[in-house]
Image (cartoon, rainbow, N blue to C red; front, side, top):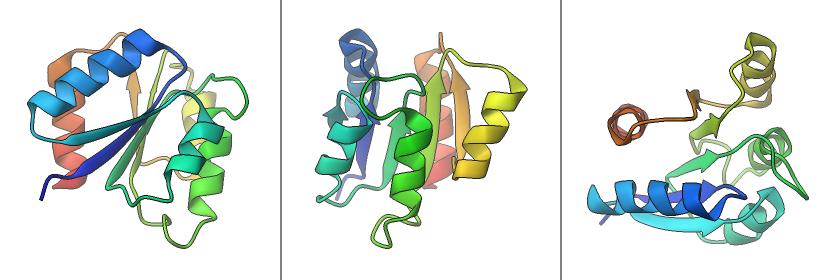
Length: 120
């Protein structure tokens, strides 16, 4: 059974690129437009969340905190996919419970390597 990955980004083009990359690699991909939308979609189990940091309604850090506070999702790996590369933001993400960090722009090889490493 394919692993399910939830990608969360307010940019439709980024979601599309991530979806194509992961779908071509055999993953099932769900999409959310922001953190609030992602939380609504987590009624369905996922194996990995890939989220942007800066989004309307609920940003990536808020999403991570909410996911980590949900016992059903506590162990789900979360990768930040963002233009933010400052160490302080990375530390904030890590403190909230992020598993990893990918800086945009990214290559398809980068994202696949991180996904494979995290999902095993």
